[in-house]
Length: 352
Image (cartoon, rainbow, N blue to C red):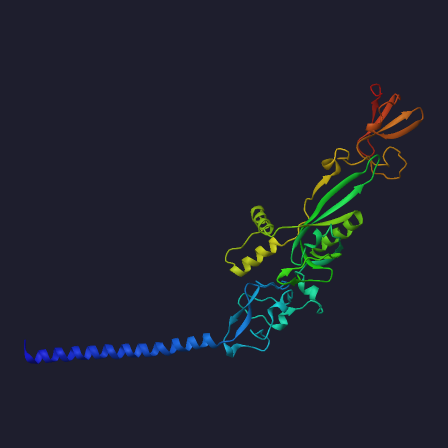
């Protein structure tokens, strides 16, 4: 090979190696300060209290709803709760006044403490009402109902009539959210354990229509609360999806989808009720409605009649009686009635 070409080849190789080393040192030098700066920010940034999930207005703060997170120091505001300065335990049981998105710092103005003006109004879901019902140890699940729990309401009453009265118990409302027991809206703990205590009143979150039903139910008989398991919220959600009550539009954000599902799962239910009568419990109790005292001229003035009636005629005198009471009558003609104003003659030759 020509000596001149060899010298040029060696020189080009040296230049290429030098260029590669210079470029490597430049890239390494540029990346190191960035990594170092990021590490400094992560190590020195203060911790502020943020929402662990979306907190709509009216949410009662629990331990899993908030937590501390590193935050850039230049973005920290005076309204934030800082680690080491704020006691999270004192914030449990407060209510969110303004909606807070997941990961957003919780400000002092966004929470309302028990006893503050407007606390209960802030705890209510928009469109809902608060109503208080009296309970005792038996009706209040022996004190094992706490704010935030969900309960069913059972009405027990005695329907009077001829003979034995009808004893009945009926589940009239389901999935009611407990706002407070007596004047307490939080769970009290001692040595890390929740304290169970007796209470005389329970404040529930209901719709305006359900509030009217509860007011009437208190005049009919005694009310009892049945505590619902937490897993029933998922069951209510699955039932709503299967029945078509919940339809999630396409393209909604995960936060909006979560809000819709939470709203359906927490909706109170005043639909078809279930009931049990005394006859279902004891053979010595009735299992059907007692006959109305006003039917058949039993001495009452009520115009409500139980079952079909007939008009029994004896000469010039007529009497309206229940079909079950015509046995043993010796009259020759009976006028049966089906609807108001409609009469038809009925022979009594077979009645004894």
